[in-house]
Image 1 (tube, rainbow, N blue to C red):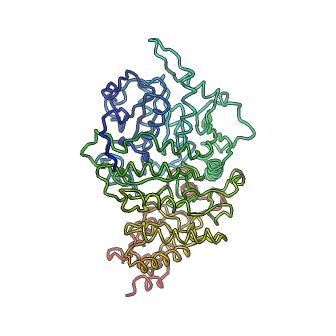
Image 2 (image 1 turned 90 degrees about the vertical axis):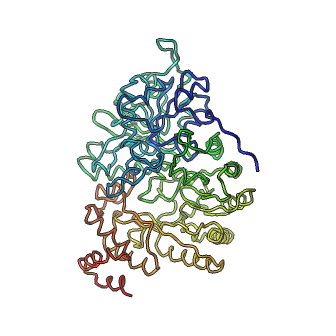
Image 3 (image 1 turned 60 degrees about the vertical axis):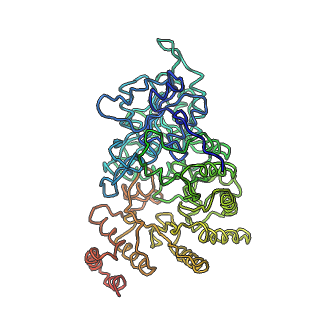
Length: 627
């Protein structure tokens, strides 16, 4: 096995002035502020953007989890950059990261050393940007990452229980990059470098005024700005999607619901329109997204010189999120599931871009050289485990499509669901020296496995994939996400009928018997989703009891910005039909649904019986608690 290279401090992007001096740098081009600890790994956004900018020839530093109290020394220590400050809350929305669905503080922050949850503020995007604008008012600030991306227009904030305007207004940032940032930055950097101007001491820099002038003259795709009407490039055009204003959304929840359909559709089109939303006397202008990355572009992002390790400053400390992914490999970007409660397609898009086999194998070989690797890969996956290399057969049809999901309400007949490319990756990885076993830790879409394509070769390949997955790539437990048992609720969730779960479980049990395995199927379920009632949850409890499940992987629905379910939850209307929809909102109603997950716990029994009597369903008491 190839010997591990001895790493130096300069193998990481610098985080301090001393580390910059070790590289011989007296000034930086870009300084990135992140709400996460700095892990130099392609699963961590600040590392990816830092390495992308470095590959453009820039001098880049990362300030992870700066102290936002006191004299702001962490924001001052590296001075001003030549081009801009970049701000991201981190790999998760900061409020989801910090609080449970019941608005209680989580036990740990997975992206902080030793799980500490006092190292980032609420809404870091807003807090960090305010500080930078206070200290360096003439330096452009670009915000991005999941928190900013999903708050680019009016959105519902569950933790404040209020509609909030675009985060551009709340933060005062000069530019917002939404979605995955590689292509926007690759386009923006040459523009800025071509227009550097000498400041008073002769240093070539970009100031805020020049920055905004450039972006008005040459609007950048996949970005958003807050502008006066007269500054909107080309003015408001007939082709623009003009949303209901922020004030209208606050006045009328139906306006908020109507906006969502336009936002979602334009986020998932090859050729999208520009979105404009009035906000007070100004306008949020959201330029169309880039088309999906090519395979070469995605390979380039993953092949950059990551150390794949936390920065040495964290020596002896545990970063929980890193522990989860240190021996995993992401195979693709995007997800065409379009689940109503999920933000992946809103951020990554629905079109799949897959890495080449060569790039994947290079990363696996790098993992085998890690000193604590024992031969077991924890995950060969992605946003969904089994969408690798899947796309439309006729791409011209995809270019005209605006469906938010390629598999709901049924699998698109143009979608190629062939799993042979994924099987080829598994086989190639497992054949590498140093690999004892590769597991699939990401969630599996069993509806793709069970979909009859009408092509005997593909159907046989998918059956083979299913059997190999169960027999060879499960580390004792296989995660799947039926989410509910009620087909009515599942339809609102944009998930397949629960009947498919029965079908998949039969196959799972059969393969386990044939191979003398004792593996578990772990289903994920959600309570209090829009459209779900306490009676639906009671039925779920009876069905899962009959299947002999004592549920562990469960969650109460948490409204997060820019999902269909959140808009329905807040507005009371389904954004596509504009018909009223019920949501459990009070603590009592939410608990009345959630406790059905735990029918097997003695301390929940009396509360469940009382609830079943209240809904006049004594028949379910018998079915749930009979011995």
